[in-house]
Length: 380
Ligand code: GLY
Image (tube, protein in one colour):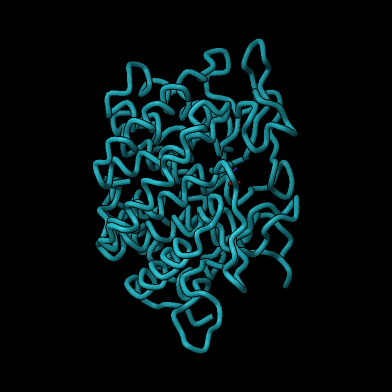
């Protein structure tokens, strides 16, 4: 695909896509889209993904200086209110991206209050026996594996708790964020720096009983988004809590593993252990999550050589995603411009295997905005 070659061209295409989605007046939160037509499959309540649509509006409003997108973001953020009390660690995804960003980028007080309310409830789900916040009964995977499982995707709780801790959200949230992060890292990062998605814990002692994956090839494989989520949220935690050197150590380990194992074209397959043939799916969304994490880490890591190496790697990855997987603004191309194609949501269930995924688009937008100098690295 001859997609956009520069961050500014890619951002232009993504702005067109965001505005087209607004104009489409979709009935629920965009979740994944058909990359032939651009038609969205939506979720009525935001599932774990809906906050990324709000985030595209909040961030798009800032990056494209577009007040109409900010107004739209306010409307969608209010639609998350019924989820404040959802029993799910994935409220971190919903309310950091879907609400806290409104406060961070635009000083929106309603969005801040919604994020604080959700963070207070989420922090209350910290289980001292397990040493972390478990999945919760309403989390995506809990219906098959149970509510008390630990999951690396659950690190999404960390930015929300840390935002709330810094915005007057109450005592103890920062400590819970730290403990949740360290425990998740201890349970899910293997000795070689690769990440396993999920862990069962003994309900009495909290000791790990088994490690496994919901969405990867096998229990011993490395599912791409397990690695990517660990990178994203460990980089965030390390930036926010620099005095906790174990966080930076963990962020560097998972990042170095990605860099050492990424394919030559930089865009990861859906699982690093997936047998490769011409049908094997890429996951542009996991790659976008990882690339923005590396870019953010480049702004935090102390060693200037490492910082330069990370920035180069992240830039190459983001520009490859744009050039090879983002639909262009081109008269001969009938697809809507600005869609990040080739996201693989759930290979095991056969759902959305080569689609535009709302969170993948969000992280590409965030990464390109940082590369273009339109968003301070590490502001989000
Ligand atoms: N549960 C988060 C993901 O599928 O990436």
